[in-house]
Image (tube, rainbow, N blue to C red; front, side, top):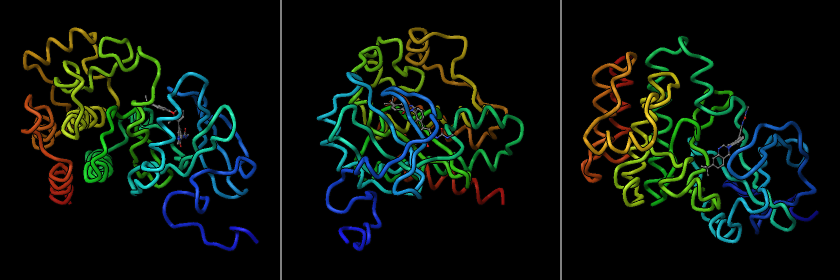
Length: 283
Ligand SMILES: CNC(=O)Nc1cc(-c2cccc(-n3cnc4cc(C(C)(C)C)ccc4c3=O)c2C)cn(C)c1=O
């Protein structure tokens, strides 16, 4: 009975030996939106598993490099990382199949629920993200575009980090050149917007900005400033203000993430523990 009888591995992929998914076992339903690589749809695998499938628009991604990396990404499995289940590369366009997150992106979730979330809820969101990022850090994996827009929420209100490492495969140079209009300057550490020096410590800087997004319930960082002004302000030592919903202790965690020197910023392991302490303290 083919691989039906062989239990699929508990880890990421559906298929047994390869990380290829047989497209004939996928059915597509409603469109979820479109991102950097193209349209994303809700789908079903073997008629019962809900999945998200990302169609990769021609010319949007350096596909060979990605397919090489995909095997590694599929081994990154954690409760707070959106699981990559497999790829369909035997036809054009190729598509990626991932875990489906019912409530969509964290940024919209925060904006839609503005005023309804207590600081414990907000802290719980930050803890989820720090746990996922700790797993990436432990595996020497850098996200490069951590922000509330790149996190997703499921129906159990678990927050997961999405599209980690994917910026390396974006072909749109408006996106990845630091002077490009789409470059995420407001989430970037100084060593990133100056020298494109990425590390887990530059992800920590972005995590501090994500905490600020969470505690402002989805505000745009430096909302009255353009990217080039933010580069100057941050270089001169200016930082985002304390959100009203963030107690001084919480704000001090954000500020640690924004230390100018990367090695003075905490690790995700330390961040996770500090946030856990704040969560328990309030209980
Ligand atoms: C209602 N539920 C849902 O909508 N659920 C879901 C929505 C999306 C979704 C829908 C449209 C666009 C994008 N999207 C957004 N930003 C992206 C950013 C990048 C980088 C490279 C710039 C970081 C790459 C791809 C994307 C991308 O595909 C996503 C993640 C993905 N998943 C798994 C869901 O469960």
